[in-house]
Amino acid sequence: MPAKKKSNRRRYSKGASKTVASAMRRKESGTLRSGKGGKGGKVKSRKQAIAIGISEARKKGQKVPGKSRSKAA
Image (cartoon, rainbow, N blue to C red):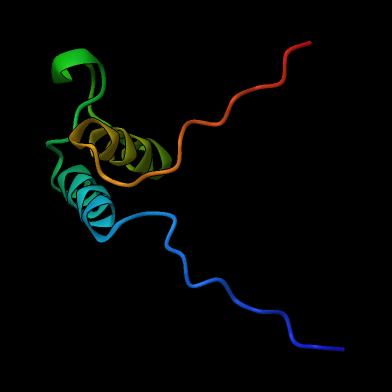
């Protein structure tokens, strides 16, 4: 049985991963805020910080997979 070929394609660009890393650093320093215009509360969740970083990368036009669509009932 032949070995499975590993794809060399990146799902996220290097710039996108830097944007997410930046959001994580801002979360740790306590300056990352949620909501439109950053007027919401402080972000405490790691998952939320990652989501904000991915969203910022999308706005900058960096290579990020699209949002997952839910199946229509």
